[in-house]
Image 1 (cartoon, rainbow, N blue to C red):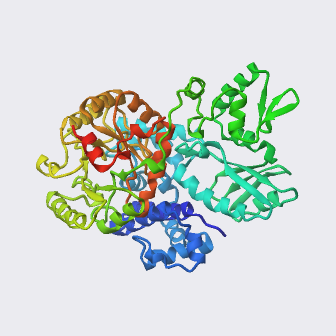
Image 2 (cartoon, one colour):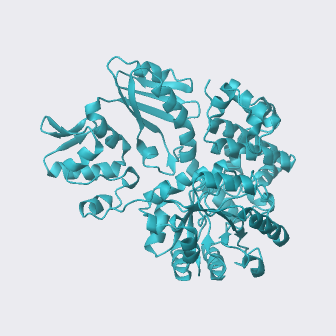
Image 3 (tube, rainbow, N blue to C red):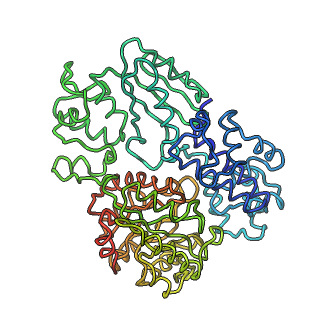
Length: 572
């Protein structure tokens, strides 16, 4: 049984949720949360590491006990401790925690006070007014919970891009091992690098007679075969995602890849151009009458309708066709353009690795600099650092930097914006930093006007240089906060504060639409990994994906600059 990293991370997170509802030791809860984060962010398959006999407790934050649990999950597909805990704490309570306004304490309170153990119980408590009688549940909170409940039935399940990648990597490795398969490419929203993915579309070429379909439906993560024919098949994997495979002749490979990559509105717009030229486009090629005139490659397809190649990330019918026709397509930023990372955590707060390990990992990536942004004191759950601890860290950074030739650790912190817009550290400490990164982490439910004023006051502090994860969203968990983003973008542009595209797969904040709007408002932008381990620095690629979807070029992103240029550009 092939168990992917996302499945292991989900089991650990669910276990941590139920422990937290049970009011278990917070250090124990944190250990499982950290394990979920480490496994989910790892570029190495836990299944492969177990098969190879690797020492899992060498992973950051993974001791012998957690390593044994990972091995159990890989070998059996289950976590026995979770099954035991679910006999004492209803499984559905963990699902309730996903609703805005409901954390572990509130879920525990509702369970104890009203016996709420399911979404239906919660809906009934709202309907009867019982929820309003529970301390801490005001009318606004109840309304937010009701809106989230109402949206559950209509929302289609979508997987975070990072989770989808964890599913894709072993699946592609398996398919490429089937005799006779020549190419396997993932199309759809995954190829367009959307922040979430609804399903997976595979385009395959193979020699005649290759056992493609039999091999595909025989993949051991398949839970259900939805359909199977000679050229297409659909399955649902154990994690719930649907995978559709199309077997295509090589002469049609480009057309099929284009057709199944989408987006739908982009494809419709291009087909209209084709019709005006007397052409027809489908997954098998571009046709004039019955004669196929293009389709072996995407570049050939675009040329047939008079357009240059349009990168997949731009295919959303947001002006890319007109820009391509007029020669105005941007040269999109690439991962290799990034010269350093401006948001990373160490074991001093809620990270897993030391300063030295983070520096070594950044240097291995070819970076010239890395900002260490451990949390400020307000974020108690992340063991935020006070002024004294930060100054000790700055001294340690100085000692390390003395040994580097072409690399520098930057003194920084992820400084909380307090409820009134002040910063969580005194100006005297901020003045000692190379880069000051400000962020919101609490009181995210303030009304839009108050939230906007809070952020604007923080931006007025002349020490602030970067606003991290500006909309505070967590994908599939927490929507962006209510605020006038246009005002925030205008203020950031005027004051010279850079806005972050946070590359952590749980955030991707700013998203593509907001990042494009910020650039058009004149804002500076940075892309940062928000790494909590050395391996987490690889998150950068997800941020670059979103920057490309936002039409950003290398010149739009400050951390494509060498260190001296970066520090000059960040100056207020």
